[in-house]
Image 1 (cartoon, one colour):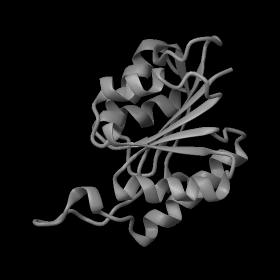
Image 2 (tube, one colour):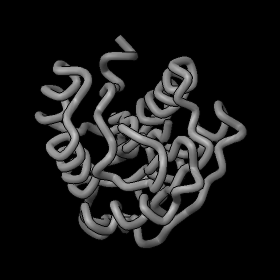
Image 3 (tube, rainbow, N blue to C red):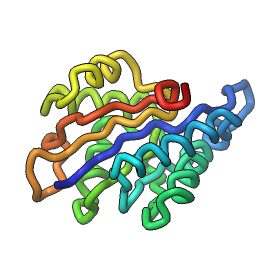
Image 4 (tube, rainbow, N blue to C red):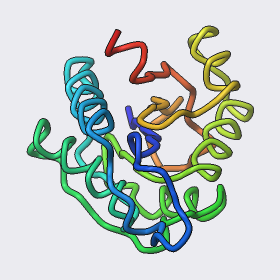
Length: 171
């Protein structure tokens, strides 16, 4: 069964006038959360075999923690994922149907928009997860989906299985 994980980058230093948004780094708490999320995903048996990652520094740093925990996860950096909208992210997913478990690490609002769209189209196996996801996709959070059927990697086939937030795991 194919799986899809949509992850927003971990907590980032604040944006300030004159600072290049693309170059913003994770905070110390962001590094801690990214590592803990990677460990949790692995413990759940959801280890991705491919991660598509925005080229922004904060997403690359988030993905480095995933790679340190799940060595078999191949990383592919995609310039078009930086601040991509729902449609752009969905198109990237469709291009990688050879993956068994695909991880996308990107940015809001596109990541949250897509996560909500998938949930509206295919539903949720976990009502509480759906309620949390409907509210917000905070930094470092992951929405985990599983396909209703094998075959083409179409985003609309994915049902929300659970939703992980750093604050739930780190507390």
